Length: 176
Image 1 (tube, rainbow, N blue to C red):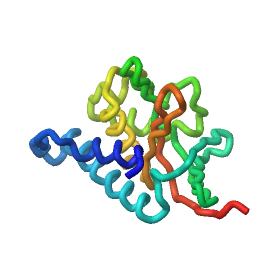
Image 2 (image 1 turned 180 degrees about the vertical axis):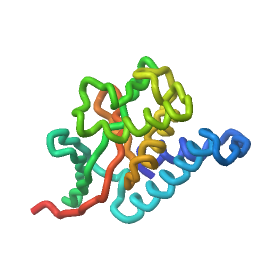
Image 3 (image 1 turned 60 degrees about the vertical axis):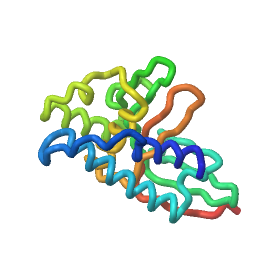
């Protein structure tokens, strides 16, 4: 199993006892459902086009796309939204809706989460930068994916902060 899939698996299936079920209609229930949906999407992407086995990834903010490059020459391309960045050194998450490095058109999914947070009084969705864990950053990405009807979410290691993003329909092509 690749490092990416191992990380996703560890987030989705903790060895600690499961949390008590949340009440339908609560924010906690919405987040749990969002994580379950993202887990199913990630499993399907891994099985069909090998998400998690890519050699590299890149985002072109001008084109609004993310590319995943594979050893066999396959390139997976999709539209992208940047949810935010997580700094493992400081344990902080900076939302994409007010991130100086995120182009305006790539903020939509993060803006939807902020709106949901305002409507439901969820401070962690409405504060520009918050202290959190990487598992919570995955929750943010899962909620963004659900609210924006994304095809999946990805955590890219940029050699510093981790970039949490959602992506749309994936198109596969073989490099010549």
